[in-house]
Length: 256
Ligand SMILES: NC(=O)c1ccc[n+]([C@@H]2O[C@H](COP(=O)([O-])OP(=O)(O)OC[C@H]3O[C@@H](n4cnc5c(N)ncnc54)[C@H](OP(=O)(O)O)[C@@H]3O)[C@@H](O)[C@H]2O)c1
Image 1 (spheres, helix red, strand yellow):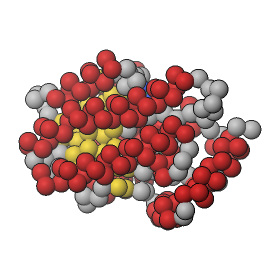
Image 2 (cartoon, protein in one colour; image 1 turned 30 degrees about the vertical axis):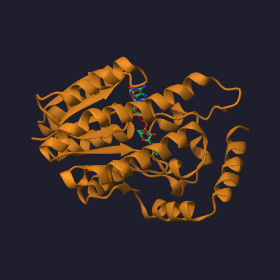
Image 3 (cartoon, rainbow, N blue to C red; image 1 turned 60 degrees about the vertical axis):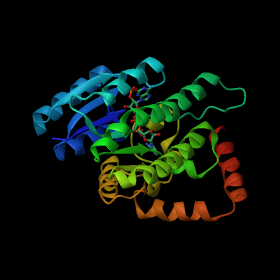
């Protein structure tokens, strides 16, 4: 059976990737900081789907944590066929006058770790002419809205660029750009879910289902749901000053 490694597998979209990949008969390496949650999930997946599951505790804001996962990705034993770079978090704190540490950690987890893990995983995939990488980006990457959205813009561009580079070797790279998805993300980021209209919310099950479908189809970017496909088209077509003005309005509301 092929092996998949999912970062941020202890909750939300990452946990859902673990469930759906186990259903598709992938053996799994689950990583995050929360060992207990990972062990509980691993047990469930072994029982329900009879797959092999390894747990790797790692803090991806730290070089040592990244190195642990990079080492597993380079291992010849049970080589990884699919890397899902999913771990992440956001913040609503203002940049000016706010704490610099969460901004730095965001870049470490959303950019540096994604780059290093992908760098560790791809050479073997290219040599074996099989496998791929999914990078969980966001629709936030289409708008100018702080470190988080700048990091997600990097993630989408990075995935698109690599997709072209490795396509001839039979390897796939895809950016997944979900909109608001019901997970623990917003509570952790102090985002009030009631401030987001109900029709804007997606479920992680459908996000991951459509991501895996798009990945199999070889798409370099996956935007789950017609709503966000349309919104994406609009956001990328309007003049940039409109997006800048919209963001000033939104951040004014958030900081009230
Ligand atoms: N939910 C949304 O509306 C939404 C929309 C677009 C994109 N996304 C993206 O989707 C991805 C998953 O988010 P989610 O919504 O599923 O949020 P979530 O439920 O909060 O899950 C985030 C996962 O990332 C892990 N993580 C956070 N910081 C980490 C660190 N320093 N080292 C290692 N693992 C870390 C968490 O595990 P531990 O805390 O145990 O380490 C957890 O497993 C993120 O990249 C996010 O930016 C989310």
